[in-house]
Length: 196
Image (cartoon, rainbow, N blue to C red; front, side, top):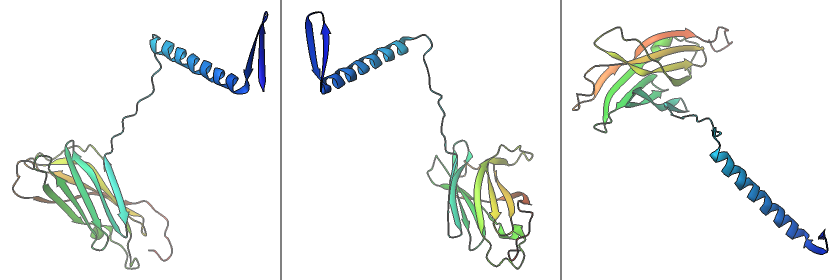
């Protein structure tokens, strides 16, 4: 396939591939010129930047849940829920010593007051960030709370961590504390036959 362009007495003959190549080069050249012009414009087009910052991560399998979340701006924690024993444990990790510095735990199954008909309770745990107001001067609240849901009953409870003021100064031993039960409610109001 040939294209013929005639200008006065001169004839230019192009085959099909030459036309495609010239068109492509013209498009690239035009794109570069438009890009150069846009970069020098007084009001450049900017894309919306969305900062991503992971505050927590959760993984669950076979009745066990583990994850991480922050307790303070520079204090990370690892949490673990044991579906066999019903214990929720939170371990704070020191950025200065690179060791675990505190452990908070609670037997949460007792808080749910499950009926005897629920033979195999099934729990799920997620974390949330909450800026709680300190009412007691001797402790301060951690930034994260832990929500525990029992699937069969639809009951949910929320737990927090109270950090002592001298937590970072005691580098020799691991501080031991209890998770504080903040509140509990029921998210499922309908009774499921055979479950409760």
